[in-house]
Length: 584
Image 1 (tube, rainbow, N blue to C red):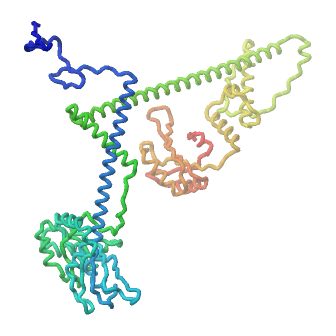
Image 2: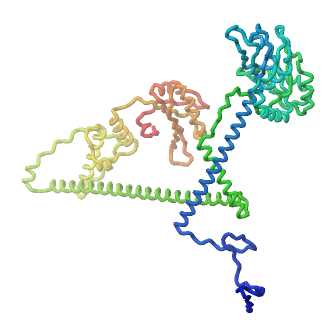
Image 3: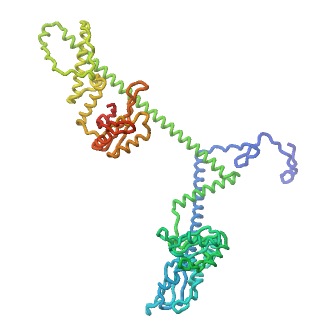
C-alpha cells in the first residue's frame, strides 16, 4: 500500500486506496450463503454451554406457551360472552307481550289463539291476589323467534272476548337491540322462509311439493319431535334466490292446507342459531390439559415460523428436516434394540447348548460307570464259580431253581439267537444271560410299579417296537390311578389328505358342537410307509368338555356317509391323547 496523508486531527486526509483480497471468502455464522460459498462451521459447545442453551430454550418455550395460553383464554372468554349475549337475545326475540286482555280470558284461550304461529313454550299471566283475577296482560314464549314475529305482526289489534288486544315486545327488548339487529343482518344472507301451522299428518315431501312451485328449493326441514316420524308443526324452507322466497311468503301466508291456515314469513335468524331455552347460557371452560397442549402446539408453530423467517426459508422445509432427523434417531434406536435382543437370544441359546451338553455328559458318565460296575460284578462272580478249592465248594449252597415265568412276547424282548456252545464263550454267554434276567426284572417292576428303578437301569433296559409304547403308557396310567373315561372322539375315513385345508378344522368344530362343548380339534395325517407315494390316513381328534359328549358324537357319526366316505368314529384313549400318541 502507498502512504496515506494524515490530517491534523489524526484522521486520514485522503481517500483510502483499494484493498487487495487474498484467499477464499467464507461466510461467518449468521451470514447469508451467497455464490455457493460454504459457511464457517460453528465451534463445538462445551457441556456447560449446551446445558445453558437447553435451559434458555426451555424457558423461551415456557414463556411462549404462557403468552399463547393467555391469548387463547381471552379469545375463548370473548367467544363465550358473545355466544351468551346472542342466546339471551334469541330468548328475548321469542317472547311477546299481550295486553288489554279481558279478565275472563284464561291461558287455554291464549294458547288456542296464538298456537297456530308455532309451538308455545310457556304463557305467563300476572294474578291479583285480592281479586283472584289476572291483571290484564301476559307474556308468551315461543320456540322460534319467527313464530313470535308473525304473531306480533298478525295479532296486534285483534278482537278477543270483546276487547282489542295489544301485542308488542317486552320492555327490556331495547337492551339487546344491537345484538338482535346483528342476528337479523346475518339472516338476510339466507333465502329462508318460516312455515308454521303445518298439519301433523303432512310430511316433508308434501310441504316441498307445495312450495317448490315458487322456485328451486335448497333445503326443506320440519322440526322433529322425540317420536320418530313426527314433527312440531313448523319448519324452514331455503330457496336458491330471494324472489322465490318473497313469492312464497306473499302467496302462501294464511293459505288453507289440510284444514289449517299456514303462517309464512321471512326467517329472522341464521340456520346455525337455535333457541336452547337457556340451557347453554352457562360458560363452558376448556380442560386445562387440552388448553396447555393447544398452547404448546401453537408456540411450536410460531417458533418454526420465526426461525424460517430469519433464515429466509419455508417452515415446512424446516419441519421436514426435523422429521428426517427424528426418523433417523428412531431407526438408530430400533436397530440398537434389535441388536441387543439378538445378542440376548444368542447368549440364551449358548447357555441352553452348554446345559444340554453338560446333561449329556453326565448321562454318558453315569451309563459308562453303571456298565463298568456290572461287568466287574459279572467277572468276579464268574471267577468265584471257577475256584477249585474244596472248602469254597462246601460253603456254596445249591441255588434254588428260578421261579417259572411266562415267556415274554416276541415284540417286547428280542432274545439273541441260539448259538453253538463253545467253551471259550462261557463268560460271554453268562453275561448275556444275566443281562436278559435284569431286563425281565426291570420290565416286571415297570409293569407292577411296586419297586422303583434307577435312571441308569431304565436307560439300559431294551424294549422295542409297539411293546415299548404300551409299557410306558401302562406305567403312566398306573401312576395316574388307572384308566380314565375319555372325552376324545377319533374320526377316521372322513376326508382324504388332499381335502385338508384351513377351513376343515372350523367345519369339524361347528359340526361336532351339536353334541357338546368342543375344546380342541387336531387333524393328524399318518403316512403308512417311508415311500414317497405311500398312503396317508387322516385322523381327526375332537376333544369335548365331558365324556358323555364324546359318546354322543360317536353314536351319531359312526357309520355316517360323508363326502362319499363312511365315517369311522371311536372314543380315543385319554392318556394316549394327552401324551400326543395318535398312532392307534
